[in-house]
Length: 161
Image 1 (cartoon, rainbow, N blue to C red):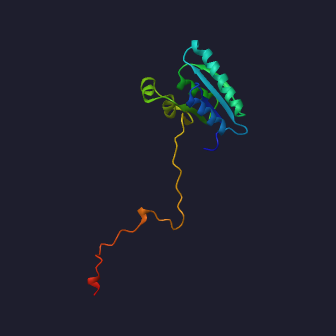
Image 2: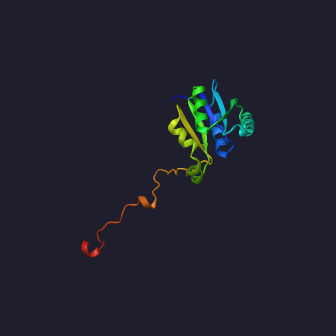
Image 3: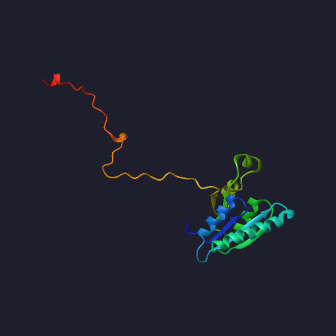
């Protein structure tokens, strides 16, 4: 797959969703279409979805990125898949911020999308994993593990005489 040009981002206001929005904005280039989707599970929650979209819009303005904003009502996985299909998306970007207990009780949107999405899925971590910096060795640098093992021959002057 080349660089995605049509990206759908699921946004629920969590730290993971903010990371996903930032990652998606970073992937956008000239001619890209970014669509931010906030899903309300019922019509009673539509106002919250609108507030979340305004929050996402503010974050994107700071990143100098423009996007189409969509509010939807339904199950998040189904609505994100529908948005991806309607926008002919190359990529769906979501966050991964639930604990194991939350995933067990409510399921994982990111996990379901990975199995059901019509396109690639990028799951942005809530907090980046820190990887230790590789240690570079100078030429001739031999640490203790690289020392040759001692010889098994006894060192005895008597044997040489």
